[in-house]
Length: 80
Image (cartoon, rainbow, N blue to C red; front, side):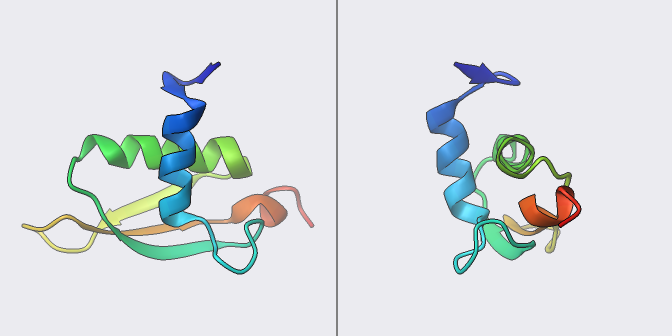
């Protein structure tokens, strides 16, 4: 199975980088290091797949690979 061009394994790998550690249904607010800019899209799609919410990803340094990733998360996207 593929979702928006990614396999479930690819999405799971991306999800593991950003999922809330204490409550996977909670809001996402984390920093990650991405070696490849294409990983930004994979994280965006993984968040949509696992939470049905929209990711906000912002590069936090002009020459590095650090990103700030935020999303409403599963619970909030359902209105709970």
